[in-house]
Image 1: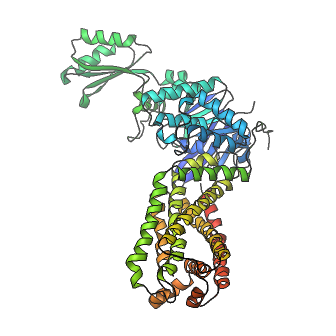
Image 2: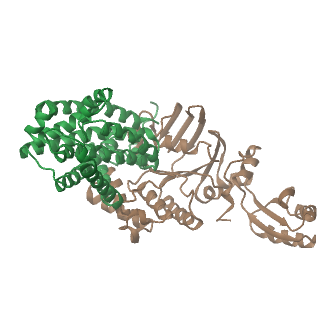
Length: 325
Length: 270
């Protein structure tokens, strides 16, 4: 079968900045592919290239078999794009926004009405359909933006950081909406900075940095290689740090790491909540006074470090540990 | 070409006219549903006219014309340019906020995005012309030519507004942000003030007259003056309607010939 996306040696630079540096990537039909990476890794450039908004400098990129440079029109007929910003018209209602896009896809009035209604229903926006989009919450706008990318029934949905900047509840609602689409058979390319988002939505994850692929696999493969949960203990006394580390050392084969400055000990553990219970009793037995303790999925930093042996740039966003722990 | 591409499913796409219309309709709706734009624009132009008519007016000699009859054609014409400042900001905002990306990812002719905006903004000029004319009549402006000439002036103003619209689209496309676009659009001030719109060109210093006399706004204002004021304006300005109308159409064509390709180039940039 023709791959949904096939990129070979893709290059793009903006002035002196190299955004894509020989990116190779294949997405098979029936897949949700997450492109994961820090800010500036080239994720958005890649999506914009797939969406025919940017022309690659070198390399080849085919979307559903169509070359993005030579057949951009054919590519645009199979994609739907939802961006980082909600690109909807605030001065039109949700329904009007969707109908506009449906009409631009060449649907006649009746078809545009039907597909807009279907999408509103799917995204749970029917109740707000006749309100101006400027009265929507951030999450609702993002949903409407997603909806606008859906009214044309695309074969491939492109989602560029769909939940960046949303509160945890809106994120999960949007995840559910995306999950429903995937269930209905739409292929998805999504970019994200959040490991848990990739884990939640994708059947395949590609990690990119500096415009190239550094690791690829299913979420569970990547997690096995790198993405183990982390227990982090904050001790009340600096003097307890060594004892805490010794206590936690028995939990798993990972060597606990001590961070003096913040009075924390960190250790990677197996999946599930059992290690947390074991850690608490080990600390109790060692007589460590615990300020607080947490079990969390690894941050993108930690995955990066494990997979590439190199830490992320210091400025990178490390907000990954929230919400869906 | 090794593999045979999968057919692009049954998804059709909209033609140039339909997509231009859809995009233009959105622009008009946005304006009508944003009361700030409607009210501020109207109040601003009314204030402006009142100040010129009653504060400066007494000190400005306009030859054989009443100052109000001299001023209002200038005021209506320059009003098109002031309205255009909003168009530049609107274009930049669409780029900044991803609306243009959405449109560019759709299977529509790419020219429809710019054409749609230009059509919408020109339609809004009708509104702006109606407001400024109404305020003009309210402060004493009167037609001293035929009705047909007045309608011709109206048509001419739309052509001129459409041409200048492309200047504002270009500014918006190159500015990057709405704020920068608004800043760049300040260049309408020399065009509007250093013209015959508010005062006779002869009252300016010689070097400035050279610019004021030949720039498009002056030609346009004088065309509207002659069309609405008839004989008195012809005597004051020195030429008949045809002279000014032909020149302002030529200016409009020249502006379009330069700025449409520039706007398209700005739009096509990666």
